[in-house]
Amino acid sequence: QELISVQFKRRVSIFGCDAFSVFSNKSLAIAPGLETGVVKSDLVCSKGGEFGTALNLQIFLAVWDKVISDGVFLRHGWTVKADPDAVFFADRLRPLAFAHEEGRNGVYLNNCKFGMHGPVEVLSRNAVQSWHKGSQHCKDHFWKLCDGDCLWGEDM
Image 1 (cartoon, one colour):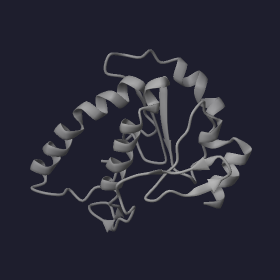
Image 2 (cartoon, helix red, strand yellow; image 1 turned 60 degrees about the vertical axis):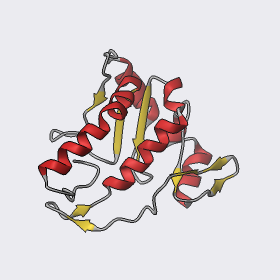
Image 3 (cartoon, rainbow, N blue to C red; image 1 turned 90 degrees about the vertical axis):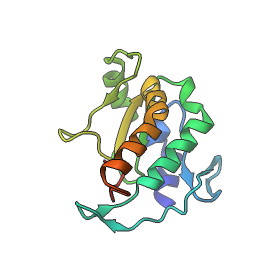
Image 4 (cartoon, helix red, strand yellow; image 1 turned 180 degrees about the horizontal axis):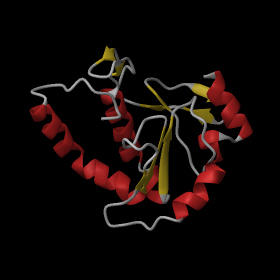
């Protein structure tokens, strides 16, 4: 909580963006003028699976459901998901993001040669909407593929 409060006061990390949200499983006053949005999750996950990582897929899905239901992303060209301890510079992202043309299904900025990975994720408005429209199809596909829970984290 202290790290987020300092970032908010200094207007760094996500707080350097045009809009921002912080989520938790309960309403918290992080700093004057900053309260958390509440997600439907206890925010607890175990470690394990094929890679011995945080099995946080359900948390990830709960947070993105909240992003969709809040709808703030609809008023902006890009959405960034940044972990509180991730190094993120909004002013460095802006020229990179604007260099990408928004397609019908959207654009995400790949942050790893193995695909998108957790600490910082950048999606265009249409990409967030495409993810939302296709998320149930993806969940069903992997549930069938793994014959149940694949025991993966958000970086599946």
